[in-house]
Amino acid sequence: MQLSEKEIIKAISPIEVIKPGNRLFSYFWFDSRQMKKNGLFFALKGKRDGHDFIGDAFKNGASAAVVEKKVGEFPCFMVKNTLESLGKAAEYTIRNCSSIRIGITGSAGKTTTKEFLYHFISSEYSTEKTPGNWNNLIGVPVFLLNRNPSSEALIIEMGISEPGEMDKLVEIAKPKIALITRIYPTHTEFLSNIEGVKREKEGILRHAETGVFNLDDPNQSSLWKNFKGKKIFYSISREADVNLISWKRISNTSLSLEIFWKGKELSGVFSFWSPVFIENLLASLAVASAVMNKTPDFRKLEPLDGRGKTWEKDGVLFIDESYNSNPSSLLRSLISLQELEGTKIAVLADMLELRNPEEEHRRTGKLISDLKIHRLIFVGPLMKFAAEEASKKRDGVFWVKSAEEVSKKLQEFLKPGSIVFFKGSHSTGLWKEAEKWM
Image 1: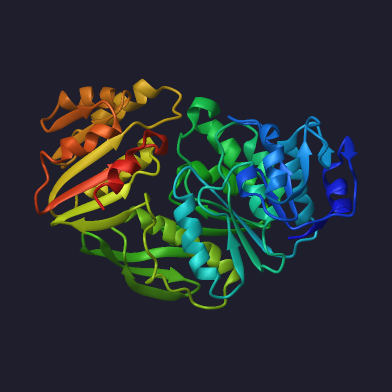
Image 2: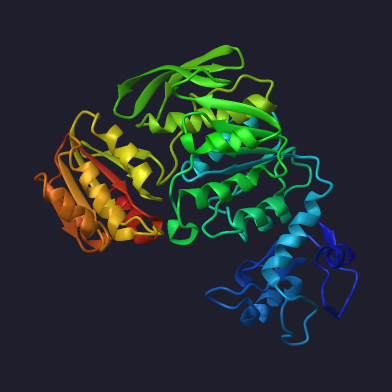
């Protein structure tokens, strides 16, 4: 994407332009260390203030900067809020954009569904997707500003943690097709309760012409009933536009599936350990049904790091879901885990951003204590509450203070035929411990 200085001024309406010129910008970024030639640097304020690194940004190729205060004698666009200006610049590029814009949100499965969908529609269209977890008010606009303007389809993951975030994201990206994976009571530390989460997620539908909904999620019924555009439904348990016909387990790491899609049956091996991932697959196929003419092939899909990736070492099967965790997704995964063949060990780290963290962890400990999992290793100060509850009902319950102690505890139990399952919120660092066993 290229924007002239005149276009930037039109997009962000700066208070003042310092050292104006006829510049053409082809790179838009916020990290001075990764700046490039002809770049526009956004001095964002976070844990570190981007204004402190403007000199570095210009050394690395920046032609101008968007700032809230004057720093040195560099060419700058002075604004009230650099983060808002980043969004305005991205939104400007969307106004006349003809690409298929697909927004994905939900309390779980967003990234996996995004990757599945990219696999499908990139076979038919030139497609770009938000990288990694770039689903917030920085990642989404930076992705849109740096995209290839000739891309025919854009897949935009949209995440929230605080009230009002979805409204801002939607006004920036304006997705025409909106998918909601599942709605759980996540981020309740900031969104109060499930109703607060629902209100935020519903915002993705504002500009959508097509809404894609999960019939198995009771929290979505009010959303699709109120939606006026075209509706596409997917389901594991009910007849829908896209639905699961049947599945069976082939091994601990693969499933055989039959799926109804656009009046035909898709069948094959799905190389994922848990049937939970079938829901992500159906969601992506439902979106694909709205835009694709080709028949999608799910047989080449592979799990992502931290989101269901599996590997075997010395006769032990490892399952890594350490990227994130909440009470609902954890319980669903553990129900699947108990069905696998082998000695099952669950390593469970703290679940963060919950409104009542002690209560939620205690409730989780009670719920999972009855599952047929041989050993439960709880990790972190919040999971200590879960361990206390689980240990009241069963043996094989252990607690360690931090993720760094996990490997030592695991070594006491591992033997050929063991299955080790990792799950926890990303910032607990459990993923680092999982990587040690690769």
